[in-house]
Image (tube, rainbow, N blue to C red; front, side, top):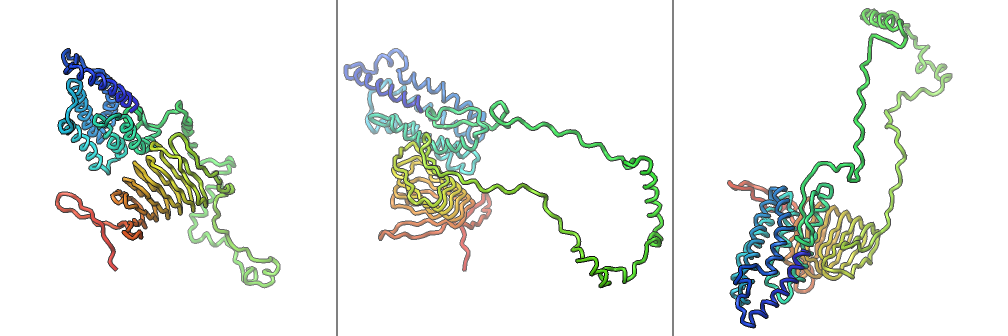
Length: 445
């Protein structure tokens, strides 16, 4: 995206030159006459032969849905180049003509986004989402007067998914296309990380097993064979083996003779139950210090206990918020940011204004999320107890849930009150002859 932003700036300069040439009667200009591409087409070609080519090569290496997605992106890049070549040889068209020129590229952009929606179950869904969220940046050609901020906004919109990909594959990636160039991370699964990269060396192989015991030998030397012979000779006696035992009368039994019981003290309690192997004393739980700080583009909110006045106000669109292990606390996020993640939190209340990406709740318990502005998607995963308060501007929000329970969405009424609606947790799946059809069900009674 950095190169694309630079391309936009160079395009603005080139457009100014073309407008000056057209006002002086230059017509299509020398580029049209000589067949030489304009400066911004040349810059775009450099982008195609550089990071776009790398993106294509690595997408083919990954294969699967990523490779199929890349085929659509190749069409989009090709159509945009054709549009730039046409612009270099033409005067500024009317709005209706520009719309018709943009129609093929707009159609492919929609196909790129639709491919992501059709493959939500793909293991590479985050890869597809990173591309789908950033592909509208190709519409910069229709942004006036300066398309640079628009491109930057599309880059920020995809940052959540690129961060997710980096998190999921942080030990397996081979190459990463610069996120400022394509807003897309290319990753390929590899084997274990070698020790040269900073990991611990592999443990040494186990030694050989001990030699088998020789039952024919004994530590007692020659007496071992004699003892074995005597033992087997006794066993061979059969029932006569008990004839050598001495009879014990009742007056010799401690539990039947009060005199012996008094002399011997308390009776033994019998064998003790098997005890667990001795272990080291459990170390006390370590309490980590609370954290509320901006680390690069990430607001880190960690280990907060009973903090009810947490506020993040100095925000930017490119920033994300990550709350981890925050209990019995409230967090308010002001302004418009990229994404918010709640991870392993209990009884946490979150209030935020606008999010351009996604709000994710994962591994949490009894949390409340309130939207004051807009958010396109809220994801709830592995969470027990989640209340989502929507605003009037966020009623079109998509709520995606998995492996979660006790979820409720509260929708505002005209009088300002909320209507609480539970999110289904039980589903029915049937085969309709060609595919599985799943619908939500309710338990009667």
